[in-house]
Length: 209
Image (tube, rainbow, N blue to C red; front, side):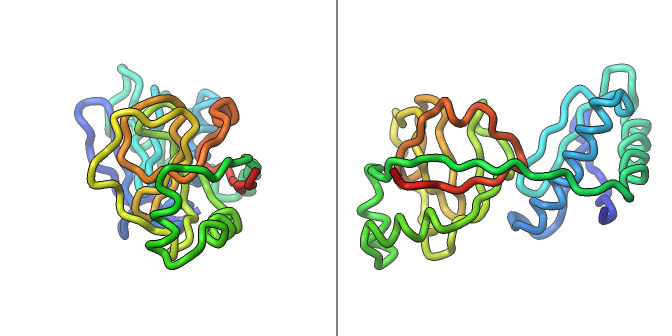
């Protein structure tokens, strides 16, 4: 496993390790390696952490109340040294059926110079990875959206996005697990019940219904 960056302090009870270079698949892989390593150590009782919070290029670790941040850093780094010879964790694969009938699909396809069917074919041909869960409980942020499908977020967010909406925001793809406001472009719908088991690091393929 590659060397950890130096952490920054988050208040009195957490440290955050951040990889340089912004959002990228390489950084996401580093974050997920770190996340899985610490998850395993936590499950074994080897790391007294209250919570692990991955994002695109960072991982925050919240210490138990009786653990100093200097001791937390030592224990995290010890977990990494102990994991250097461990094989990689297998990735869970999911296939999610999609009804590609989102309100913004026609506009996105036209902006990309594609027919709606060609846009859908391009979208479902890609492999996606759950970078992390955020924004609201169960909302997966996905890496892997083809560059030709990138699209700016809506200038005017919607006050109500239906549950299960598959959406595009910039270079990101995500799925709203429940009704909420949202400013991403809606391209389809997935049964929200299928989102429950998704975790950071999982692989996803979308299948048009």
